[in-house]
Image 1 (cartoon, rainbow, N blue to C red):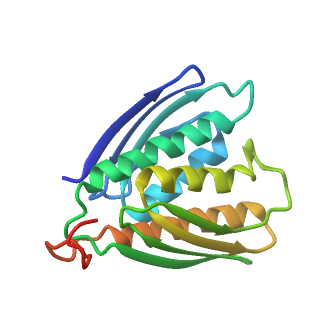
Image 2 (tube, rainbow, N blue to C red):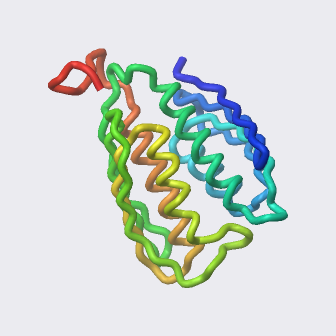
Length: 191
């Protein structure tokens, strides 16, 4: 089974995360940030990954440390669950609309991290989730998962834009980690 169980405890956060890439989309997420819970739950549902997250952090400061460290832990868990990546499709992409918003994500789950994200938000926050942390969350996740991600989103409603982005990431990941054979998809023979 392609699973991982990762914990991270610092002076700022305490995070436990379990993931099963061959799950059914069952999510059990508690971070203390309602909109972030909603996004991680949506990611799990649409990627069809089982995901359990328990995250506590210094929210009295702000949500930055908790969201950043969750990105670190989720990225490490994805990398661990994928192992040597033998047999995976490796590439995935998705275009997801949500009302007036449209998000596009293209991924290479190939062992190199890079993020290009084109997104603009008009509100400073959606719920207790700072919109400036969208880029930071995905950058941290991509770095720790060792994936290349190109993403863009447009629209009028920031909630819709962020949710479409998380759903597009989910569908792109589902496609990229799908088992298609036994070989590593690289001319080098390794990723």
